[in-house]
Image 1 (cartoon, chains in turn yellow, red):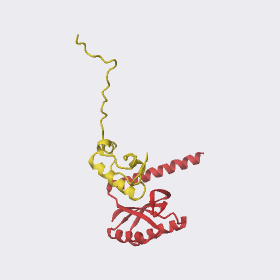
Image 2: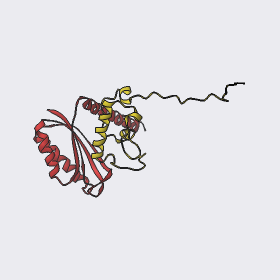
Image 3: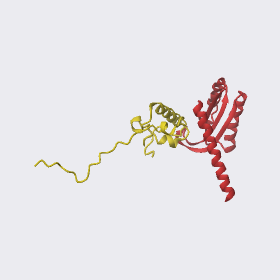
Image 4: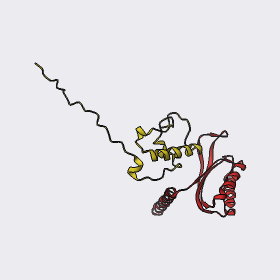
Length: 86
Length: 122
């Protein structure tokens, strides 16, 4: 009586959404340090830079983003340390 | 002649005219060094993300210009000497930055035209 276990509804294996580099995809060539709200999208609530494994950006643009964020912080457009930024 | 872009913050204690006067002072300094001002933007009084010299707001000013390389050293010491300036940042512009700046300017112009048309119709 080896009846297989049948699930009531098929278990939905969490389909892994393909990560892509938003700079390559939209053809953005320059990361501007002046528009802080775009840079905020790439930071977490504490204002720290999100790692590449989460944002999926390629190494070349991650470095440009890092430089832009540091310049924005220097000009007080972005905080060095923040809580509940979003 | 390379392209540079400078953003600097002036202390909020200044009145509008004093702020405009400091901006003119730096523009004259640049012209004296043989630079050509391509574009300038005044973001006005803005809140700082963190207090600088105990002040939480400042007048932001952007200057985009073309200058010989030797002009930048004295230009920056001029900034350091002037106590009305809280902070400044000069960046050299590579070709992608120049393209970006131009497209940003056109976008701003279109917006202005659109808003002026809207006002004209209203």
